[in-house]
Image 1 (cartoon, one colour):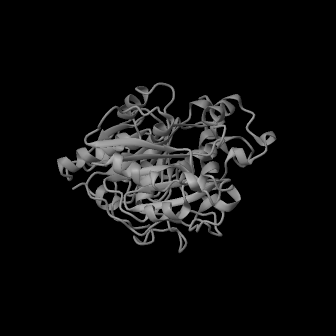
Image 2 (cartoon, rainbow, N blue to C red):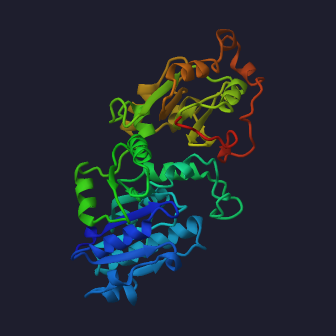
Image 3 (spheres, rainbow, N blue to C red):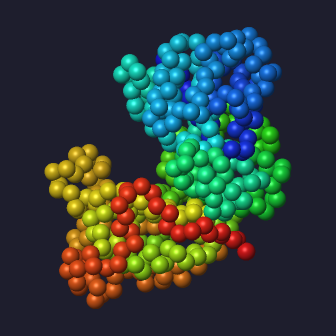
Length: 412
């Protein structure tokens, strides 16, 4: 077997969504595939005994083909264990498919980015194994309750330590946005209207992914192959918010009542006025994400991220206009992208916020954001004087910050 023929399926989704049911169905309908499984938590796997029966059962029961990473592994340690496990299985020569079932609180990008890193022998993982599918399992019955709760992982008792302040809704959005296929599971338990509403949101969060409805995780490999082939050779794409910012959103008009738009501005936000606006309710907004700058920190690029009842911001680094051009990217494509957004007065500094929601008042929301921009009189001040504005964004830490308390968004 050629080593480049090793395909990897990453299986993600929040706790209780039905990942194990999907895993059991994929194993049960594996056909002649020679499969290995990597689990984050073997103790809670719940693999059905019947899926291990057959001529290759020993590969799952006694060999190295069933590998547990362990919940105790975290951060770089978890990634290192994963890289080395995939590398060993890929080089073994006995398998053509590897399934990685992630824990319910893992962002799939944490795993897929590992394929750009070297294993213990210095070989980049993507040269010996490839990611074919990133399958995100979504609980159609509980999604809206979780997404709009405003809770973080510690509130649910599933955080990775006392400092794990990640918002539940942000994790759910991240898991959806990087999937190549989204399994909308437990549709038999969900109210039809809520299920359709959810499917509309999923299409906006990840327009490149195929949404597969399931009961009891009844998904097969053939369905995955058909879903990926419909997208051509590029299986993974950009999340919906990034497509919106780039003007490449694939969905036209409404998708089951869900709409999207982008707010753009060149002038910076007044830090205090924008902070106050962030504390207000943005009726109907289900997801918003993008980049912004505030006058009091003119060199800093901020990212804004809101999902359901959670609102966060973080400093990403400096705008390119604040960096000497000898340090600019040398890649022609990256340079061309920089030229496309460049402004003679502001450089690459800009505000771009993508909004996805139901019954959003676009005009009112845009007006409220316009009111946060510097006025003409404030713009005439020297940039050094902008630093005197009251600035709630001036924090000592560069970590993600909660922008406001938990809020619940209603579709009513």
